[in-house]
Image 1: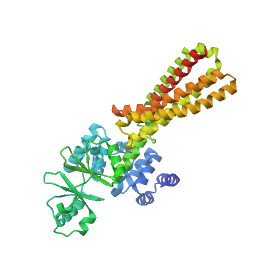
Image 2: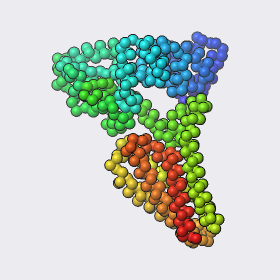
Image 3: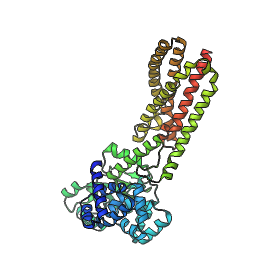
Image 4: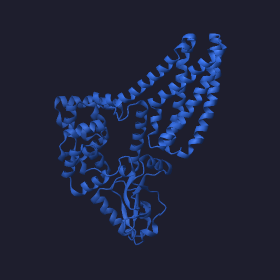
Length: 450
């Protein structure tokens, strides 16, 4: 549903709520997809949200809950009792149920778990033991598996039982396990349809399958899906036993989440949701990053103050301070954005540190040389100061080379020590490049022109 359609729908819903047209509102909600209702929710006032929620059909309310963004889901969960949340969670796939429970405070999560049936409790508790950004954290425990000793007929009966009793949906592959639970192979549904009923699945299974461990980072899992065009992948524990599966819809969410996280880090708005309404919460999320930028600006100002005498004697130097800092920042941003993207997709690895740095230095040298000549000629003709033109051209060359070096090296080094490389594009590194660029520029000016 487009933004324009959502806006029209919001106006209609608000009018129905205002008029108390319960039956018409219920009819409207019944026709909507759960994702569209979830998109509509943040656009409504808090009282309207509560009113609408109570009228959402029971058969889709759990799907709406999962589709809500974090602030809207948090508000809704505050409105619901532990028992109501428990009933909703029991209707969800195990991975979605764990996400909802994990978003609650410890006391409320415990009460919700206590209200659920034993099997649902066990599944959620098991998933909550995994880091939320690993394969174990995003996998679902509902998985279609049969024994290695089964015939095709046995396997089909087993699958029917799984679908009817465990609610498994979208079976892409059937996984074959040994008696001890170890993953042995996989079969696709086409093989089941064509194989004779008495054939052993062990004779049909493909043993060369891609699997991931529960501890694998979700970005690495996403890269496997992209590389091998997967729609589903089995997850195994440290002993090779089948633990669950990850499907492509989970990976789409991971890719969106990682992209949003990197963009928010770059902008200094990490952990902030677009629909977040709490002013103080947004303030504390943005303030640290702005403080870093402020400190960087103060350090840059102190560098300029240190060279005050130089600037007083040659006032024209001050004209080009923005040029030097802007070019350094832009160059570093270009280099680091390519490296960060490559690290995220797996196209750049740790062993690529030196080759990547040398490549960026070569590119920076060429860019700096051409841009330095252009700037030097413009300054020499504009201000009729050849020496100043030569100085600016040379310092711009050095600044671009250094910015290229930092832009390529810092994200890789951050990745090596376990820090999100997207931080390399945040205010800390860009402020550092500004300070270094000013030191190069004004330092050479003091040595050469005075």
